Each structure stands twice: as structure tokens, then as C-alpha cells.
Length: 293
Length: 293
Image (cartoon, rainbow over all chains, first blue to last red; front, side, top):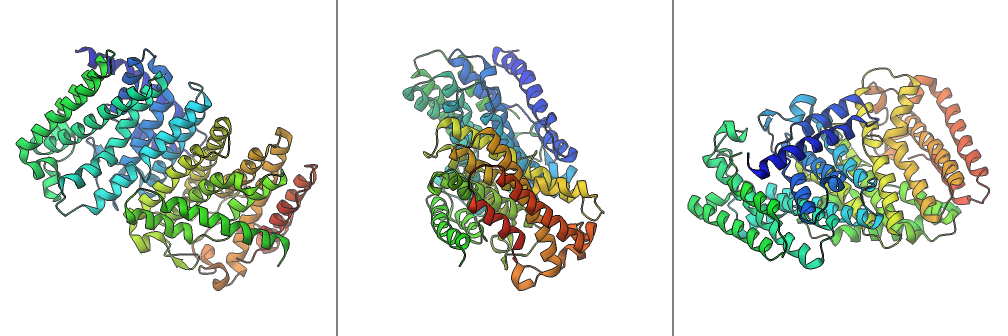
């Protein structure tokens, strides 16, 4: 196993146990907690929390210092998947090869579980003892901005509005930079912020995060064409059959792969300018660009 | 016009203009902003923000100091109405006599507008300059707890689970204390907290808020039987035709009216023990118990 994979393995176990414990401890109706835990448990590679930890370690801090922020981040990512899968939105029956939340718990509970995860995320940061009140307020401001109408929710809205029409490349990038990019950027920037990065470094890491966010999405689009259903946990070719604009559809498959390489190079350049070793963040960029699932 | 009504009139104008201005200023897709603003504009008496202002003034502070928290509160209340009205939840076509959000903007946009309001609420408090970082963090913790799985969302879940069966009085009170009570309590406690109330006073005001919260709900149930459609903006008798457990159905109409009086007395007793004049909060309690809409 490579160093990055064993790093992820180790932190993921620690992270997932804390994440589920926080939901388990809630004084709330059982079906609500079960529905929240179901989707949290169905999580994949935990890429956002891992990026937060990796950024923290780049500044010589323990992953544990970012645990509450990482849980908040994963809860917000998870709520967005639950709501996106609803019949009124993408109407998906499967997510990572398992029935989606509303398929198991019904639509009403799925809506409420999403609302509960989103709300509880902010409580987690606000009640964390890992940072000062000044830091907590700044983290909440960053997270709400990344997840809200000017961030993820705005991106999702633009994505819906853009369905079944051919987008321009700038329109496609607006969607990805908001729908997935802002939360990925928060992962890196929150870790750097808690770790004590200065403004110049934070801006370089934002650039890094922006590049890996786009790389992540381009790789997603490529996998939808070239991956196998077993690998990606959903039907292959769903973008094409949904008439969705993607990097391969706008740039051709070769063009998309070139763009993926460009974004990956951009990420590495930002790290190189950082002036401190960042082996975990380097490895993450490569992992994202090469992933098969 | 009574003093309390002219107080509400004056503060409401100031409040609503600030509230809509904050949404107008967002850099987000136009349909999302329109959907958010539509439901914010359809607001009724703004009872939660007004309670926050009244609690602040009880401590000699200007309403303006609570403006960001009041907007956050109203956004969270509004998101909960949008999601509650969805076809998968209560499936309501009308809210305060106007078409519900999903009837105008479609279900997907309504879900996202709710998510956006909930998320932006926390950003508003976290970016407020009206209080210190310590105060902001505490307000966010209080609000997230009141609105999340241990508060409003938990109450909504219990409400759904209790539909079409006869509830016991404790079960009915659990639902109301969570579904509507926690956010009403936050209104009063946030105002008191920003105003500088000590622990003894905060606990008395929490008691006050608990009583007016139940009084509000009992009055709601009574109006559903005795009100007119024109007054309450939705069909009269909908609780009975939905087989919903209510105070009149569990206690008889006379019993419900007695309980309303008890709760009102409890609210006034809590205020009397406060040891400082609280004419606005007294007037609010009476207003809630006597309202006809």
C-alpha cells in the first residue's frame, strides 16, 4: 500500500467512528437518527475530511484538531447527496451501489435527515473545543459561504437550470466550481486555517483546491464514459443518456484528458510555490486525477 | 392602535427591509434568490424576530443589535415552512392564503431555497458585527440546537410519525415543544443573551418562552376549529379531517381553553419573577393567547 493509502486508511477509521458516535449521541427520534446514520455510513473515500487533515498536517498539526470541522464538512456533503437524490431532483435509486436514503426511509424522512445533518454541522463547529471562538466563527462563515446560495446550493441550482441544454465551457465551470468546488476548497482552507497558514499560503491553497476540484469533476465525467458500473457504483453512460453537458461532450475525450492534466499541473504548481513540503496534498492531487471510482 | 401593535408595526418595517436586502445582495442564480425572497416576503406577523427585539429592549438595548440574529431566525422559520409544505411532507398548496413555494417555483427549487435559507442563516450570524466572536459562537450553538435534530427537525419527525394515530398529551407536548417551541424559545433567549441577561433571568425567560410556545400552539388548534378561513388563510377544520391529535381533540374545547389560560398565567408568572419591567414581553404573551389569525 502506498503511503497516502495507508494514511487514509488510518485516519478514516478514526474519523468514521467519531462521526457516527456524534449522531448516535443525539437525543432525537430514532428513525431520524437511523436515516442520518445510514447515509453517513454509506460514505465513500471521505475525500473532504482527508483533505482537511492533510492540510492540517502540512502545518504540523494533528488531524484530531480538525475532527469537528471534518465531521461538519462530511455532514454537509452527505445532506447534499440525500437532497440531490430525491425524486424532485435527480431521482436516483442508487448511490455508491446502495439504495438512496429516500428509497429506504421515504421522502419525508430523507428531507428531514438532510435538514438535520446541515443544521447539526454548524452546531458541531460552534461547540468544538478544538479552536478559539474567533476561529470557530471564521470556520462557520467559511463553511456557510461554501455550502450556501453563493456556493454549493447555487451550483446545484445552476446545474438543474442547465440540464437538457448544451452549456458553454464557462457555464460548466461555474457549476462545478460551485456545486463541488467550494466545499472541496473549504476542506483544504479549513485545515490550513486551523493549522495557522498566512494569507499568501491560504491563497495558494485555494488555488490548489480549485484545480483539484475541477480535476475531480473532469475525472468523474471521464469515468462515466470509460468506467465500469461495478467500479463507480452507478450505471455507466448516465450523463449521455441524460443529455448532460460534460467535459468529454464539450471538449472530446482527448480534450477532457488534456484538461485534466492541466488542472493536475496547476495544483502541483500551487503547492510548489507554498515553500514548505506538502507530500500528502501532492499525493491527494494525483489520487484524484487517477482514481477509478 | 395599542402600544404593542404600533411597536410591531415600526420594527417590522425596519426588519423586513433589512431581511430582503440581505437576500437581494446575494451573488446567486436569480431563480434561487426569487424563490427565497418569495417565501420571506410572504411572512406573517414576524413573531419570532419581534420577540427577540422585545427581549433585547427588556435589557435596554436597541432592536438593531439583534437584527442579524432576527434575520437568521426568520430564515430558519421560513425554510421549515417551505420544506413542510412539500408534497412529500404536508402537501399544502396554500400558506397564509398564497400559493406555497413549490407551487410557484417547483419542488426542486423549493427544496434548494429551503437549504439556502438554512445555510445562509448561520452565515448571517457568523458575519455579524453586532456582537463579539464569543457571543456569535454561542448564538450559533443555541440556534443550531433549537433548529436541528434535537429541536425543530426532531419535532417535525415526531409529528409525522404521530399522524393518523391518537397521541397522549405528553406525546403532543413533545411535538410542540420541539417543532415550534424551541425556535420560539430561541427568539426570547437570544434577545436576552445579547442584552446581557444573567443565568437566573435566562432560565426565567426560557420558562416564559416555553409557556407562550404552548399557548401559541393551543390557540392554533382552537382557531382551526373556531376561526374563519379568511382569518387564518387556510381551510378551517383541516386538523379534524386529517385525523390530527390536537388540544381540543384530547382535552375537549373547554379543556383546551383552560390549558391556554394556564400557559398564559405561567408566562406572566415567569415575567413577574424577573424583577425588571417587561411590558413588551407581557403584551406579546397576551397577543399570542388572543390572536385570531
